[in-house]
Image (cartoon, rainbow, N blue to C red; front, side):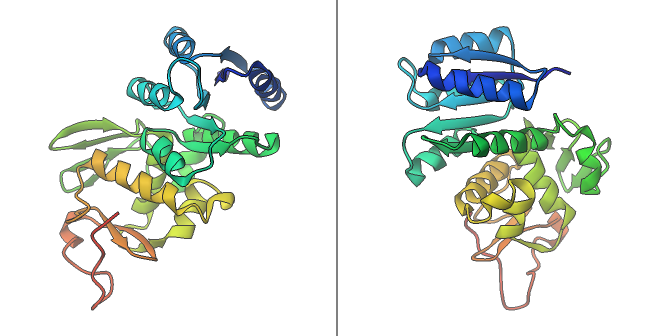
Length: 255
């Protein structure tokens, strides 16, 4: 399968450089470029890409709005570019559905390292990656009224069915692999995002919140994902949710 990349930025020198780099990293890939949000949405609808690089500062539609609209249509991996370095902007991008965020000016080696990581999480480059999780990729995992299919990245609860992004799916896989055990922040970040992300706690907080919404979990009274402040998170089957991981240390109730 040929990789298709959509690069959206109103600075053509940036789109040209990213397109050139993409063709060097993935020689057989197809690269589409757009210089406005409206053009990006049109191209996305006409030829859905496997990966999106999206600038925040577009001349017509704010990149955050474009990201939100794309996420309504697809679970495609999205990396956002911006000239702003505020943590609130990063959190906003992640909450709207972006998978990663990079500040301009950026190092091209870092950019493509992050893009390759996104593709690995989406299993475009490594279709056998599911086997490494120890979870049957063709089966369903059932926890109370929660059904999880990692093959289709779908979760089903009594409220309905929701699709997971590649990153959400990898995060849930990592938690499920250690069901009943507290998984430290650094381990989750390293396993899901990579070694370079071990200090990016806000990534984890945002994604845990997104996962909870999709599986119908309540942060105040969690049935599935418990928070241990300053330590990590624990996935529990509903039958175990009433028990503490360590006597005398009940789980926190906020993301």
